[in-house]
Length: 207
Image 1 (cartoon, rainbow, N blue to C red):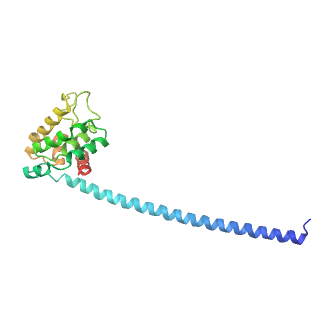
Image 2 (image 1 turned 180 degrees about the horizontal axis):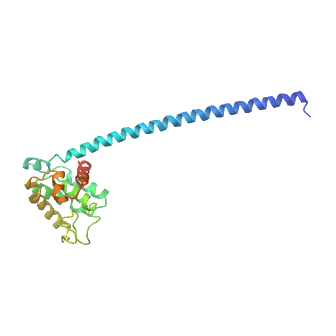
Image 3 (image 1 turned 135 degrees about the vertical axis):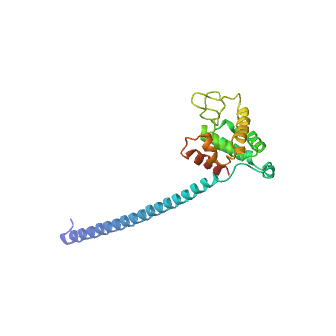
């Protein structure tokens, strides 16, 4: 049996050890809290920086509405050998669009009518999420000639692409409507600007 002085000594040691343990625990807790606070503060700073970045991007997107879609013959010829069809195919595949098989035709018709190859996909994205939400069996991804109950139907995506490309040239570009903002004023006059913003956003993605 332990004598009283020894038991008292052991009790003091236990108290000292326990106190040390609590002190270390509290120190670790405060250090962890401090690190967490710093981490949260850094996350908040990064979020603010990202928002500033996004604001700058938005400003740049609107700048596209000041750039005409019409191309000169020289510019069109210079782009024929580039990777535009592959760029469109990657974009269409990402969004599960049936236009994937018509990327070459879209570039061809855009060149033929002298405008930026990104315009047709950009309008299709805004009007139908790249043909994923269109009137049944209409192949009309561009909201072309759709007014209330009147729905223009095409026999194929090929016919639709050729018709819309020609229509954009004759009814819009040739009449001086050469930017997203100007096209919007006739294409969808009820828009508050969101249509042009969305079109410009796709132009930026495909750049």
